[in-house]
Image (cartoon, rainbow, N blue to C red; front, top):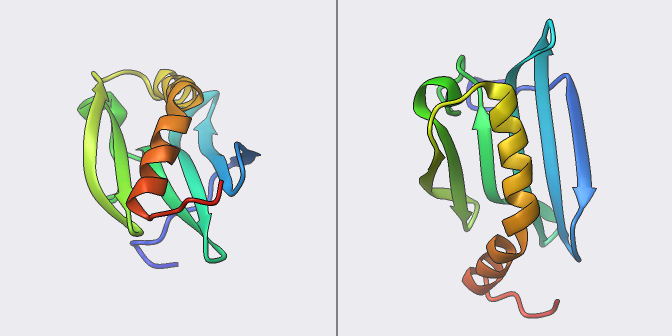
Length: 125
């Protein structure tokens, strides 16, 4: 594994949302405290899962946010590339940020999926 590849998590879950979409959650913990996580919506395009939006926390990585210092950010993806990060909430404990990210995507995933489909001209839902 190279420095720019994601590391594995202690726990990982994938939940189907709608046709060709899923939510993926991964987190690691130490003595009951969340140490890093990812919560993202993914869309299957041409046999490959692409990120739609992503929340993450990994203070030891150059490729993730530290929610305890920077606040909660949502990365927005288009054409397989991150195009921007949106600040969603001020700094908080990682466990609270994980819960917040899950709840946020439960409420707003459809909107992000619709935007992704428009950007990629996907019409067969």
